[in-house]
Length: 92
Image 1 (tube, helix red, strand yellow):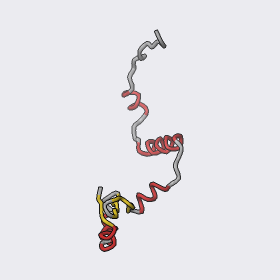
Image 2 (cartoon, one colour):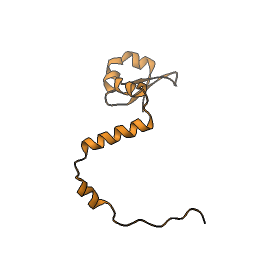
Image 3 (spheres, one colour):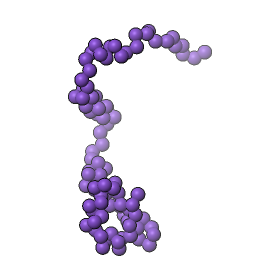
Image 4 (cartoon, one colour):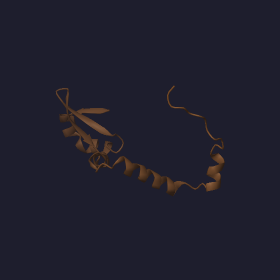
């Protein structure tokens, strides 16, 4: 976490903006107390984008895997366990 005073940020604004490409955030302080945060446009968009539901996130993840996965069904079946599993009883 990088911290700068407001006066230092004012005097070195362009340099700090360039540093935001490599640093997530820069905290700005006044009299030693945090008062503001600088972040890149990319991080700002991530924070302000519309939240997706859990279902939508899972579907997106599955679609991404479908695009990336190059395994054939036979290869997947070979990796899966052939056992019937184990017996399970609810409670005592």
